[in-house]
Image (cartoon, rainbow, N blue to C red; front, side):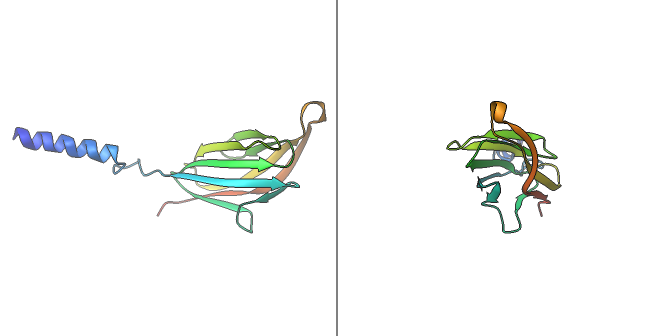
Length: 127
Protein backbone atom coordinates (compact mmCIF):
# COMPACT_ATOMS: atom_id res chain seq x y z
CA UNK A 1 0.00 0.00 0.00
CA UNK A 2 2.87 2.34 0.85
CA UNK A 3 4.41 1.72 -2.62
CA UNK A 4 1.16 2.75 -4.34
CA UNK A 5 1.14 6.03 -2.40
CA UNK A 6 4.77 6.74 -3.34
CA UNK A 7 4.09 5.82 -6.99
CA UNK A 8 1.08 8.15 -7.04
CA UNK A 9 3.19 11.02 -5.66
CA UNK A 10 5.92 10.37 -8.25
CA UNK A 11 3.35 10.41 -11.08
CA UNK A 12 1.82 13.67 -9.85
CA UNK A 13 5.25 15.30 -9.57
CA UNK A 14 6.17 14.12 -13.10
CA UNK A 15 2.93 15.55 -14.51
CA UNK A 16 3.72 18.91 -12.92
CA UNK A 17 7.34 18.91 -14.08
CA UNK A 18 6.58 18.04 -17.67
CA UNK A 19 3.63 20.38 -18.14
CA UNK A 20 0.99 17.66 -18.52
CA UNK A 21 -1.36 19.15 -15.96
CA UNK A 22 -4.28 21.40 -16.84
CA UNK A 23 -3.31 25.05 -17.21
CA UNK A 24 0.37 24.38 -17.89
CA UNK A 25 0.08 23.96 -21.66
CA UNK A 26 2.12 27.01 -22.56
CA UNK A 27 4.88 27.22 -25.08
CA UNK A 28 7.36 29.89 -26.03
CA UNK A 29 6.95 31.78 -29.29
CA UNK A 30 9.73 34.08 -30.46
CA UNK A 31 9.40 36.26 -33.54
CA UNK A 32 11.67 38.86 -35.17
CA UNK A 33 10.18 41.97 -36.73
CA UNK A 34 11.72 45.02 -38.34
CA UNK A 35 10.33 48.46 -39.05
CA UNK A 36 11.66 50.40 -42.04
CA UNK A 37 10.12 53.72 -43.08
CA UNK A 38 7.35 53.08 -40.53
CA UNK A 39 6.39 49.84 -42.29
CA UNK A 40 6.35 46.45 -40.54
CA UNK A 41 8.37 43.54 -41.95
CA UNK A 42 8.43 39.97 -40.68
CA UNK A 43 4.68 39.61 -40.22
CA UNK A 44 2.29 38.03 -42.71
CA UNK A 45 1.50 40.03 -45.87
CA UNK A 46 -1.75 41.19 -44.25
CA UNK A 47 0.32 42.53 -41.28
CA UNK A 48 -1.23 40.04 -38.86
CA UNK A 49 1.01 38.41 -36.26
CA UNK A 50 -0.70 35.22 -34.98
CA UNK A 51 -0.14 33.52 -31.64
CA UNK A 52 -1.95 30.74 -29.77
CA UNK A 53 -3.58 31.38 -26.42
CA UNK A 54 -1.24 30.38 -23.60
CA UNK A 55 2.00 31.07 -25.45
CA UNK A 56 4.71 33.13 -23.81
CA UNK A 57 5.59 35.65 -26.52
CA UNK A 58 8.81 37.51 -27.17
CA UNK A 59 8.80 39.89 -30.13
CA UNK A 60 12.27 41.17 -31.04
CA UNK A 61 12.07 44.45 -32.94
CA UNK A 62 14.58 46.53 -34.85
CA UNK A 63 13.86 49.84 -36.59
CA UNK A 64 15.52 52.46 -38.76
CA UNK A 65 14.46 55.34 -36.47
CA UNK A 66 13.71 55.96 -32.78
CA UNK A 67 10.14 55.20 -31.77
CA UNK A 68 7.92 53.97 -29.01
CA UNK A 69 5.77 50.90 -29.76
CA UNK A 70 2.63 49.95 -27.86
CA UNK A 71 0.56 46.76 -28.00
CA UNK A 72 -3.03 47.64 -27.11
CA UNK A 73 -5.03 45.14 -25.09
CA UNK A 74 -1.90 43.87 -23.37
CA UNK A 75 -0.62 47.34 -22.46
CA UNK A 76 3.03 46.55 -23.13
CA UNK A 77 5.41 49.00 -24.73
CA UNK A 78 9.02 49.31 -25.75
CA UNK A 79 11.34 52.01 -27.00
CA UNK A 80 13.20 51.16 -30.21
CA UNK A 81 16.39 52.87 -31.38
CA UNK A 82 18.27 52.33 -34.64
CA UNK A 83 20.96 49.65 -34.34
CA UNK A 84 19.47 48.23 -31.14
CA UNK A 85 17.04 45.31 -30.91
CA UNK A 86 14.21 45.84 -28.41
CA UNK A 87 11.66 43.35 -27.13
CA UNK A 88 7.98 43.17 -26.30
CA UNK A 89 7.14 40.29 -23.97
CA UNK A 90 3.74 39.09 -22.82
CA UNK A 91 1.74 35.98 -22.04
CA UNK A 92 -0.87 35.54 -24.78
CA UNK A 93 -3.71 34.79 -22.40
CA UNK A 94 -6.42 37.12 -23.75
CA UNK A 95 -8.11 36.06 -27.00
CA UNK A 96 -8.66 38.65 -29.71
CA UNK A 97 -7.05 40.97 -32.21
CA UNK A 98 -4.91 43.79 -30.83
CA UNK A 99 -3.30 46.75 -32.62
CA UNK A 100 0.49 47.14 -32.55
CA UNK A 101 1.06 50.88 -32.82
CA UNK A 102 3.83 53.43 -33.08
CA UNK A 103 2.95 55.94 -30.34
CA UNK A 104 5.87 58.33 -30.78
CA UNK A 105 8.74 59.06 -33.16
CA UNK A 106 12.09 60.60 -32.30
CA UNK A 107 13.66 61.33 -28.93
CA UNK A 108 14.02 64.21 -26.50
CA UNK A 109 12.87 67.57 -27.86
CA UNK A 110 12.44 65.97 -31.30
CA UNK A 111 9.93 63.44 -29.94
CA UNK A 112 6.49 63.73 -31.48
CA UNK A 113 3.32 61.88 -30.52
CA UNK A 114 1.80 59.85 -33.37
CA UNK A 115 -0.71 57.03 -33.86
CA UNK A 116 0.53 54.74 -36.65
CA UNK A 117 -0.90 51.23 -36.99
CA UNK A 118 1.91 48.77 -37.79
CA UNK A 119 -0.03 45.52 -37.64
CA UNK A 120 -2.40 43.37 -35.64
CA UNK A 121 -1.57 40.72 -33.05
CA UNK A 122 -4.05 37.84 -33.22
CA UNK A 123 -4.34 35.60 -30.17
CA UNK A 124 -6.22 32.50 -31.31
CA UNK A 125 -7.73 29.68 -29.25
CA UNK A 126 -5.53 26.66 -28.70
CA UNK A 127 -7.27 23.66 -30.24
